[in-house]
Structures are given as structure tokens and as C-alpha cells.
Image 1 (tube, rainbow, N blue to C red):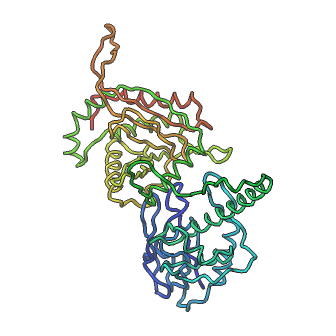
Image 2 (image 1 turned 135 degrees about the horizontal axis):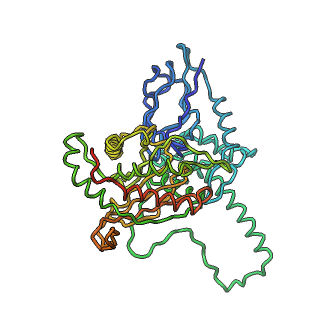
Image 3 (image 1 turned 90 degrees about the vertical axis):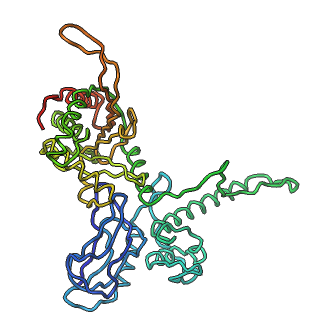
Length: 448
């Protein structure tokens, strides 16, 4: 009996992962829960344990290749059975996947072409003249679509050591199809035009990209590519609207300065403004629960759990969003400890997949970089994200029973980007105003 190893879901909105290293080879024995493979997503790097004990019968996704969530990446034979050939099974699955999968070219989704019935031009070798390795999956796709070894060698691979991945060859197939159609159209149009005089020299087409001045061309790393895709998809999915409000956080600023040394002594933790902001957000979500939702088609999914995502910048310049689960069940001390722990392990790349998924609302502190305000992009599939700006001293009108006066106050801007499909301006504006009210009403005499 054999068991398939599936690529598990590794986090909210994560649909694929790169196989970085197989910890076992075909024919090796493995125990249940023993680490089988290392993978990487745009969020975290992680190890996948074996779901059963047995012998590694077949590895279906090679190192450096990208696999979608739910894809069979390996087969393990159980009960001490000897491995059996699975090439035919794998080939059948690849053909099914090839006919049914969709890829993106530019901003349009196109259905992958069916395998060609034309005979292959030549046999596709495991290694080309360049020494580059081609996986069985890539070779099968090339054969089915009459791609020659010469064409394959010219492809620019995005996998490890320049290896051609499934996505690379599928994009090439679609690009080749589009170019063929465009060429046919061009020939048809040229046949309708009068002949060009031989004395007129025609300009030569070029595909080279030129840059003015002195430049440095830096390819995106894997994580940056996936973040870029996630951001573009969010703007494409949700009609973004951003509301702003200025709030007086003088009480919070003074209280933190008063208690931070005692807090560090009592709890062994530094208290920052972030857990205080999260506490106010949680209170406002309880007042306006529709903010804590997601959208599926024409259905609104209202979340009962309040899980606050906390955007954190990494030393590499990339971004990660660890999630504080059940933030509504924590007091300020619990929020502080959780925020500090997640932020520290984010910078060390030690978060588990479970700690970056199931967020229902996100907070990002652009004030950390000295920014006054920002217009954040919604973290799909959520419907709102709040940005907190830098705290600055400003002259402000202070209302008192004796009359209005002008004093120096600590002020901060809040920015709420929300999905206008379900969050109207009234709800978005009222929610962000409520967060500001909770911040302004903070008790300066509050006990730790």
C-alpha cells in the first residue's frame, strides 16, 4: 500500500511553495513525523514531516521547483513493501494537471493548452548541453507540446541554479502561442499592403531593453516576487478606499513613559505602543463586527474570532504578517508579550506556518519609519487594514470647563483602508473614529 504526500496549506493566501531541499532520497526508509522535505513560501521556510512510516517510493517535485497547495509531491510505500514503478501514474496525473491548470500571463488568465498531437521534434534529455537538469515533469510538458531540446535550452529558468520550473515552461507555451497568432495576423495584414519600394530600408525590430544612465539591474528574490503578486492581486480584488483621522495620544504617551521601567522590571518585557493600539482596535471591532469579515463571491463571511495581523518589516526589506490569535481574550500584558515574541521571531525567520495564517484584521505601524500617515493595501482575504503614523508634538485646542486653550499635545494620524464591496464610507469612517476615541480615552492612571 502506498500513501501520497500532499503539499499542505502553509498560511493565509499562500497557494504555492518552492521545494528547497529533500531530506530523504528515493529508496530511503522514513519514520512517521520524521522531517521529509524543506519548503519555502513568501512567508516562512518550513519542514514537512512524513505522514506515515515506510520507504520513499517516488519524489514527484524536484528541488527548486514550485508546487501548488494540495499537489502530490512524493509517494511513500508502507508496510515494508518494495517500491513499484509509478511513471505511468505520474505521467497521467501530469497530463490531467496540464489540461486543467491555469496560469497568468501579464494580467490576463489563460487556459493552458492541451497536449499537442504532433510527434515530438526530438527526445528531451535529462541534462542539456549547458549541464542544466530538466525534471521529468518539465520534459513531459516539452514533449507533449513539441518543444525541442534547443528551445528548452534557451529558456531562462527561475528555479534553483537557473532550473526551468513548471511555471517557466507553461508561461513559455502561452507566450509562444500568442506570438504565433500575432505573427499570422501580421502576415495577413502585410499581404493586404502594397509592396514596399526596395530603395527604402526597413528598421530592424529589437527586443533588447535599454536603460538611460548608469543603472544596476537587480532581479527580485522569491519572497519579493510573491509579495508583489499578493499586493497586485489585492488591488485587483478589492476597491480600496482610505479614511484618515487625527487622534490625541497624549495620555498614552505619558502613561507609557511613566510605567515602562516598572513594566520591564515586573514582566521582563519592553512595552511599546503597538499592544495599546491593538487593544483599541479589538474594542472597536467588537462594536463594528462587519470589519472583521471576508468576502467570497457575493457572500460575506463574518469572523467570530478576532485575530490581529501585525505587519513586521524584516532585515531583508521584505514584509511578514504574524497573527495574534484571539487577541480579544488577552489583557495588555498578554498582548505585549505576544507582540514582542512574534516580532523577535519574525526577524529571526523562526515563525511556524500556523503563526502567519487565519488573520481577520491587520495593523501596520508606518510611524516606525517616521511616516506621518500611509495608505496601506488590504491583506487579502480581509476587508480592512489600519495604519498608525508617527507620534508628533503639535499645538492643539484643549477644551476645558473654563474655556478653550491651546497646548502642546502628542498627536497621531490613523489611516484605514477598507474594501468598499462590503464596507461603506459610513462604517469605515465610524470604525476608525471609534479606534481614535478609545485611544484618546486611555486612562493615564491605569495600573499595569
